[in-house]
Image (cartoon, rainbow, N blue to C red; front, side):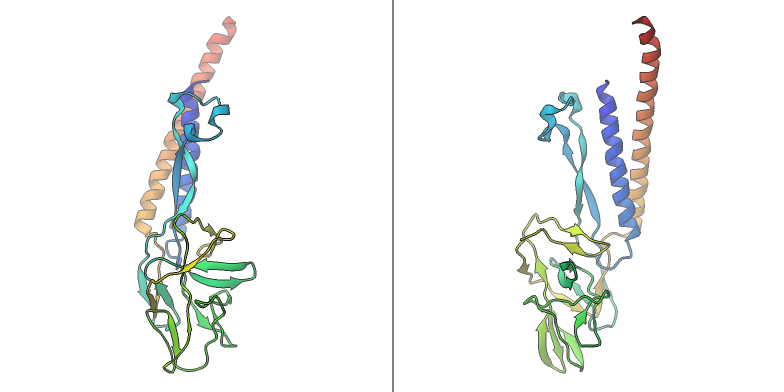
Length: 244
């Protein structure tokens, strides 16, 4: 079979997956703390299974989607006026204790529960730098750039901002919650914490819309290429098979 067919098919698959990622990113352009996902590619000939594949010729050395990676660039900070709304400037994630275990987020939309525990919008406790739930007594609340939470001028806890070793891949769960690999060791980040603010998605609407259009056009181009190959195969079969 013509090598170009494999290349066109791989290109179509890659563009389709990239199109899905672009659509998700655009849909979450207004989601607080969202981290966009960017596709990355690998070469077929670099695949450890390529030796067992019929795609063994240099002409078949084309790229296929290897997966998506989280874009860790900073999102814009938006003032809210709520002292318990927090935004991280720089690397790191807040940690929450969920029913499924510890999960990480850049969404700092927190509030004090009716029992005094600092929780997120889902009611999950926010963890301190010591990985413990934070209890906030009644009073005037202030949060410093170092993450220290004070009530009526007295420090009660330090909100945890956790960083991961370089290269760690977090797994998205929903729109702005992430799971770390098992046994990964976190460290405390020194990134400033801004009170009265939330971090917006790092995917803006205009760029996301343009990306989606480009992915759609590229997917359509690959689909047309596949159609051409299909018609060419049919023509060859109609002309050559009767001679066999």
